[in-house]
Length: 458
Image (cartoon, rainbow, N blue to C red; front, top):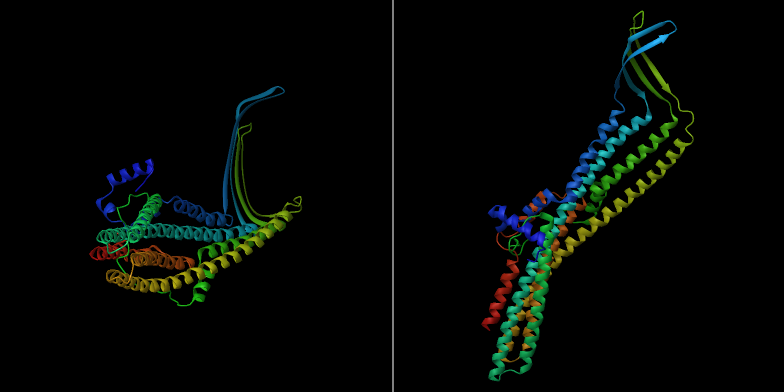
């Protein structure tokens, strides 16, 4: 694997200090756990969630009593005519309590706090699901490129055997030089494809390393063989679409923000309305001036504040809040449409993927039969070398397409769950258990190896 110098250093350190199992086996579940522990986007969302949770106590604080205390002290000298004083001092202590009885602005602020907490929670869950999908997509990309490289290498081996056979046939005079040249051209193309496939695999591995910050084994655990991918349940798109319109986290976030914007309009309009507070105060004063004076006072009363004119500020803020509320309502509509589109697209991708996997499995079987028939026909002289090479190319292409279709369908099923807000780590654990415990790309690699061996035996 081609790594930059910092990544090579990081990989070396990881290999030195990581437990033995971390290099020998690297499942999808392990990749998810590693990414969630260090993915900056996900960790930033966690901090935003913690900050958002403070909006609730901040909003409620305006409805609770406010208590404050003051203290004052001073020493002074004075001269007045023929009299003077020195070291005289004054002390004052006061404590006040204010309880809001009616203030529409603080009531709406408290309601906003609850909605802002909902918004931050929905934003965090959205970031979490995006992180899970990022890891799954990167992991499946590596597996796809592994299978692609294994298939290309096996195809090169099979073409190489066919090339050797064409050379032997030409030497004994049973074939023309054209057969040899055609096989040589196909072999050279296979070498070029192998270089490109190896580079694509290195790029995919580097992308996964950056997400998880952990070294990768030589091969990741891929599908152990043909698997039964579960069809969507419910089996129609509309239930998924309806659930996405109400339960997807982007919709829940937009809904909370729209409700908060509605409260904001009322809060700004409340600047026109009076507010009523209960006020209680106790004050104690001590003055050592001759004669010494001590005094205290207590009072409990109501304080009514009536706004009269604020230079048009309240009207302007109310218009601004109304415009932002209209924007929030439109954002909510857009979020619902996007959720609907995402759910329908993911559903169709799963259904189409399942059909494609079935079709490609049939294509793989028929391509194997076609290859065997062409090899037999070549031996008896009714087929030429190019027919065998074309059949080989068709088989390996079908195997590569089948591998990619399986991973794409698994990823689409995860995206479908994410579109309705139900994707969890245990869903990826379920997919991870489908992977074989040894090396990835074994299915296609084994199939390709058997085909190459068959070609060699011919």
